[in-house]
Amino acid sequence: MARRVLGLWCAAALTVTVLSACARPDFQYTADKPGTAPAGTVYFKVPSGWSQFPAKQIQSAESGWVTDNAAKTVLDATAWQEAFDASPQPSLDHVLGTSTPSQPVVYASLRSLYQEESAVTEDSLRDMVVPVSTLGAQVHVQTDEKVTQGSVSGLHLVFSFVPKPGLPEETIDQTAYLSDGKDAVYLLVVRCTTDCYRSNADAIRSVTSSYTIQEGRRG
Image (cartoon, rainbow, N blue to C red):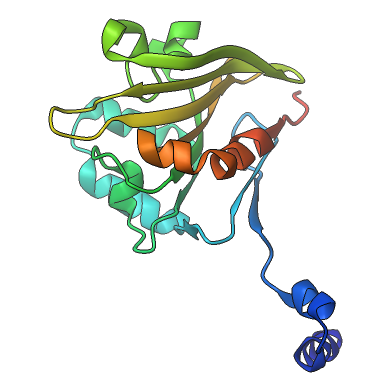
């Protein structure tokens, strides 16, 4: 009954104020509790016009693309993931592929560390997406700062590079946190061409600045 009344009220409204109130919100909000993973709640917001991909679609695409054992190990350790694309023709190829997207894409995940990662360093967090620590002058780093939220700590990194000859320069805005128990990594990545990143700086900043982690109690 309440929904019907609200719908009639919005449809009948004639003033600019009321029409504005009935309009689509500016942002869509993501809040995940990754089940049995060593974590609590992960929260961030994304502009409402950006398309979100269902979790099953992401998993299906990744299982079809991944062929090496190392990548499979990472996927098996992933507790949850989210993907968004600002393109008017959204595709997971833009988010998970190796080409440089022309519109902002967002990828967020939480995964447990596996045995080979038992000692995570700052360089390990920097290299979660691209081996920044070993590429030297090929990477232009704009931001490299330590970040903390409660009991978790990590790095916020913004850098530009050319992924392959002939491709446009790409800018990646990456935040990686190590869990309080040192057994999981929270990752948020927003990326697109450098020109796109500059043009969409405010929207991208709204995503990264909203990234919030609230770990659950242990034991």
